[in-house]
Image 1 (tube, rainbow, N blue to C red):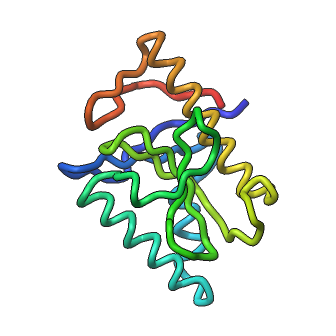
Image 2 (image 1 turned 90 degrees about the vertical axis):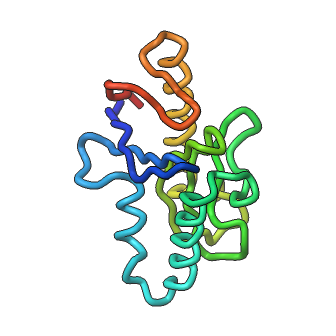
Amino acid sequence: MSEVELLLVNSSESCTMYTIQFLNDDMSEFEKFISKFRADSELNRDFQAIMRFVEQILSNGALERYFRREGKMNDSVVALPVLKSKLRLYCLRLTDKILILGNGDVKNSRTYQENDTLQGYVMDLQKFERILKQEMRSGNVEITEKEIITNKNFEL
């Protein structure tokens, strides 16, 4: 079990973006993704494309067309970008106005399940979403049109 907290990344009229951070880590999952690829010249074009999508989503909302469905039918796991890219950034798209940015990596297999690192990121988001839903049912978390309201950390 590890404890995670939900952190606000950015917010606009159209979308509120969060990420999760394991309490035993120095950086959030989204910060880890950025620091991993920001200076990678070989993957720079793919990284920049993902960052442009993140900016567009902030402007326009977390609309379905921006994402590639991942995960299972009963979860909200999606990936950026939808276009051909060596990189994947995994997210939870809860609504058109609420997005949780996760982590990602180079996708060098046909599916994320064939890559332990990618599968780990997807599973973290799936677990987090399950816990978030449990906490909503028990009244510890409220999800409004544009935000997730909670003052607690979550056990993953």
